[in-house]
Length: 117
Image (cartoon, one colour):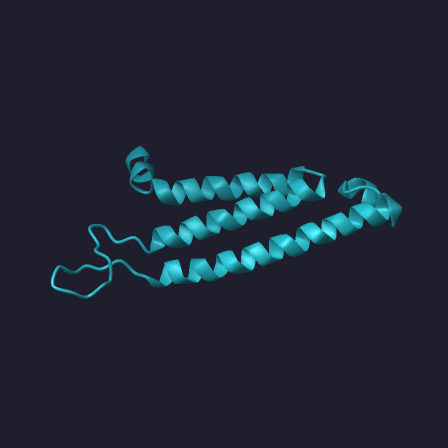
């Protein structure tokens, strides 16, 4: 069991990171802390997808005289770059909405916002 966990440490770290983010989303009342938890979960998914693209003993997928198979898969890295761009823009939008909520309601605590309804 321990050997299997050690051999898949990158996957286990991604799962632990995801669970830390999930805890922050569920347990915290502050909207900024909830959104930070979502960002941590997002980062864990990014790390997991990049870990899936790793090939043991793989070489960069650049053809030339020194290139020898097996090659690492470049698709996960390309997808993650796109995901990072989307993550940055949604983070900016969410933080601007949180600022707007604070200006309008005077608080960013989820419990207090529910009571205002």
